[in-house]
Length: 279
Image (cartoon, rainbow, N blue to C red; front, side, top):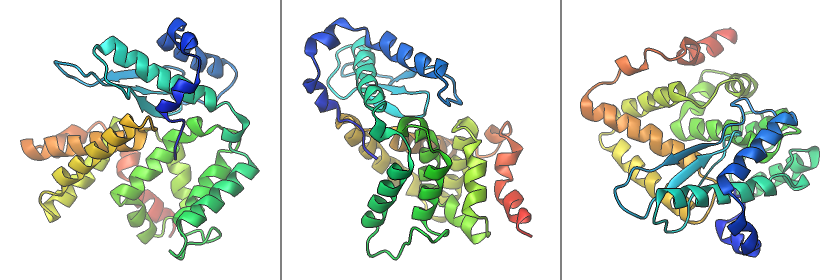
């Protein structure tokens, strides 16, 4: 899923961007959306994260209330500049997101499903088969009609992570329906608990295939860097990097259990709960 490329910023008035406080304007934009009734379960706060570095170039990420993440894409000599550039990319995408073509409607769903089917051509997936990834994507879109794609991003990222992590396959093997899984995760924030549980999954994979976490982390870092420099939406590759970094740190310290004790027990028992509900 692609958003406006950061390089497209050159098409917008340079004078406009030189005279606007990007950070303040971006925050005001999302506060206004919240007042207008936008469904933002995480509130209207825009969150910035500067990558620790002793020297330039500096990198900053910005996560929007709907879950989308963008980053500074050019060489930034100061942290403040990196923050402004990240805010600028996010603001352009936020404004573009207000276009009617970015709202999830019946027609939008139809076109999105057609595009997904085309991308899976020859794979045997069918949009009317509830057991396929396309069917799950269609179901998620239908359950979020009226939202914009930026507002839908966090749920989309969760399912991208579940697919990447292998959790969707496990739930499918346990006869959990797509509808049950989607309903459950629609109510779950992408928070430290979820990241911790996914990190545990990768620690288990590491025991079976030594070195897999480091290899996957290196690939994720490269993916994140390419996406950032191209001005694309970053939430999925960034979350992969954070989950794998957490898993690797636990593997290196030999601590893989006590850190997760504060997690929501419903999350830890999800597969069992859903599986039991089927019997």
